[in-house]
Length: 307
Image 1 (spheres, one colour):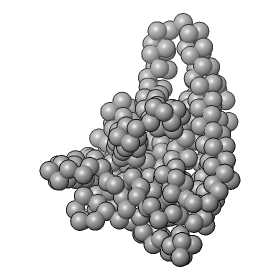
Image 2 (cartoon, helix red, strand yellow; image 1 turned 135 degrees about the horizontal axis):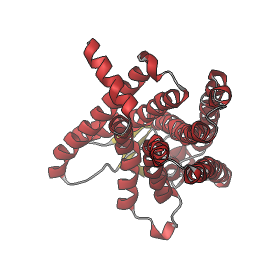
Image 3 (cartoon, rainbow, N blue to C red; image 1 turned 180 degrees about the vertical axis):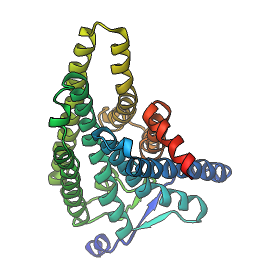
């Protein structure tokens, strides 16, 4: 009877953002606004970098895919989270949970490597300006983006298949969306293999991408300090400002979420951090790049005049 119960779990219960009824409507309105702003901002950035001829450069090619990844993982989590505010019972089917688990890590992992590719792009633009167009060719750009997509799809599917091929216990309550670590806690069999895969892949993804970013910015800072012109220093720093802001916010949230010791974790703090990187960051990124980037602001003005 017990083994039968383990194999017939068809849905999971989502704890949701809050259990206080008076907060359901205000939070629904808040997260709907955040998601709509994120949707409009990221779709707008994708359209802008596609149709504007002056934004057909490697930097904006990466920015377009950054917006696509933001749109991807916020959409993998956001709509279901919004539905849970207006239904009586917060549940998610086994198949939808597996789909959510398979989808959102693809975009999270891609964003790590796209941010590192953008830092390498900034390094070449500032430190190797004469070789920039030769090194950062269209062929290289098209290699730097699809490769993380293929890698992240393979890794995400591997982890999802591993988890959902193992039996779940009768306890089936998870947080507000399907993440690998909460699901692993519900498994009744040996989870050593899948935990090792997650640990090694997460360590590689975070360390490698962050190392590329830190090394690129170290070389950029050295080059800036060697510049004699104050105007040149300011221009170099301004081209990195938006990207550096996005990197600090994104990596800071991920490190807080996954790298801190288990003893310092709490359900409420983890919930706030996961909401921040799945909904708030995708909303902030297009705002950061549109408000701090003269090229993007000029492209918005040109597009507005043609409408």
